[in-house]
Image 1 (cartoon, one colour):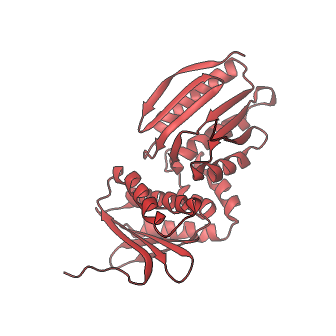
Image 2: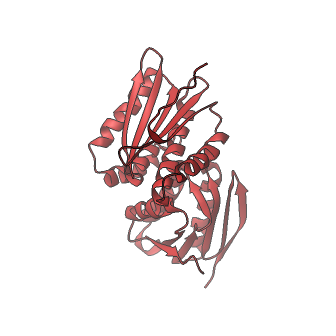
Image 3: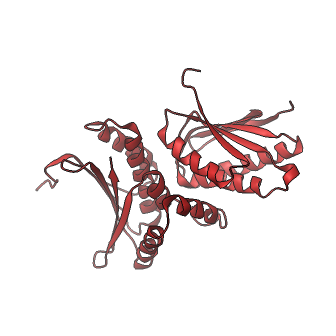
Length: 128
Length: 162
């Protein structure tokens, strides 16, 4: 399957990168304006997914230790943008979470509520 | 000089610091470590730690004078943890925040969180204003606020059943 490759963004205590059909968000998002770094990255990811007609992408946050509410807003923005696409262009996002960081369970569950048809959540096996 | 603290608790923490954003993350980690004493449930510890971070971020954004105070108290009698954050702010900011809490209390916590998520992306020039809804829903905390008009200090309190 054709994938995407975007150079890693390492800023404000977080690392963002995209390889194949997986987006990795790791580190700790507690910057007052994380949108400065996250929004341009997500926009590029979103545009490349559409360009390459990818139908499913995994957002791996298993190494994301903390995400403040300003960071959550960036993911909300992505999900809302995705939901607003016309049917044929829509793709699916699967958030891959870690049971080690308890906030991920509740935050990502709520995010999936926003658009259950386009998003899902899975908890990675810690032994893998 | 008297060192004030509250007796008869399972743990009492009182921190005052200059509102420098960089201190929020280390304070969250410190709070989580503080709660590990006498508390076993990691989920509850994370809930309080996340709430501390969100309230400190708000205090940092809306503080009009240097200095933020945070108190964490583990009750000896009830299974509750109390988290309070204090900062100086304007009457307008305080009223806005108290109205937000009043509005939130009328909603189901999940519905309100989703509503705030949708609102937060409409105007990205403003702050996300998701923090209280997040504490309310993810932390299942009871949130209240009190504004001391004479001192110009607002206290935002979150009570967690553990």
